[in-house]
Image (cartoon, rainbow, N blue to C red; front, side, top):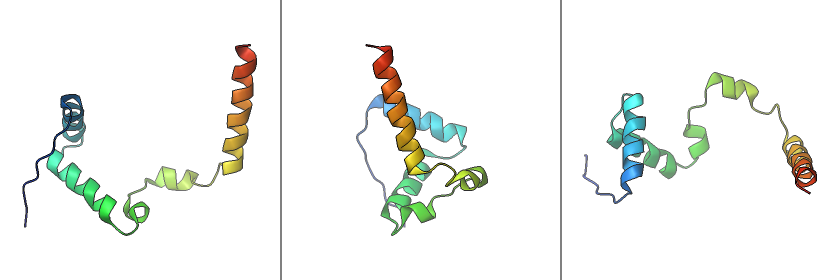
Length: 82
């Protein structure tokens, strides 16, 4: 059974969401329904569709690599703007 829901959002957010939906040939209502379905599922990550490319790349970069890169970049910026 479908039920009407009224939301108050900023005009710019609504316009961007409509453009997003139009590009994907879906209704804004369907996008919101899908989003709420993911949010309310027991394990939202498992229910999210992941492209084969992302699945293939998952795990290539460790958390340690990201932290090391971030620290190195921070040092670079500090030195650059001293």
